[in-house]
Length: 374
Image (tube, rainbow, N blue to C red):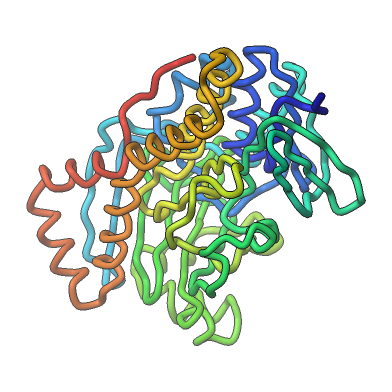
């Protein structure tokens, strides 16, 4: 006997989506989330429309949001291009979206525990999950959906966690009424790039990724904004005209874009825990939801098909994940290399500017089609 059919580590987009999907089939689900709801997260807060019908099929009624269908991209010196987004997306904060999913999960009978997990052990066929307070919980399956990096990654001896990553993520909300509601803007600066888009509250989310070398070249956040961010004329205008609504920005260190395994010690990894697409691609939130759907469907297949074993499930999840997301992540990696290269970036932007077809191809290469409903 198990305490739960499935234990999910992490109560963000991927974790809560997987929980809601599995509860439709009445499985006993527990989600472990270390933070109290609602809370902000370092995130671009742009949700591609490709996942909206699926979320609605889980009976998730999305709260007020901003419809976004136009993209603006600029280099450090201000060379820019704009394009229409074929599918478009929604501007909605993680504070609101995660809280909406959390409340729906509670209503559907998902057990959500505010505990920090210290270890996960697999003893075929049972997982034993331990929290930092000495509690132990058992399950048939475990889904890892705890985000970009966690102490658990070291506990599981994951390859990517062994080396240092040069990336730092920073995010805050700002007041700027004049910022266009239908726009997501992506602006380069020395050593990084940032995204701007409105959220459901009317606040503009400014989330950027920067290398440690660039960030540490300045003494503090204020001088970094003045001497690095403000060199891009678009960002300079935004900084001058806006007012930060947070007491201080949120940060996350050691963001790794290295290859991650989709399965570790028989744990199915979802969302950023399985692999990270570069933020300017605008598809990270959709990928988190889609990967949760894939894992939940295969777990349901295991429970309902007597001759379907764990090995087959894991092999199929790995195959599906790489088939659906592998190319997006590769394209995102190449785009980052080009756009952060001070010599190549202006020329690439000029080429893209004269080729609407190329822009369309790049957007499609980093996004997916509308995913099937339940």
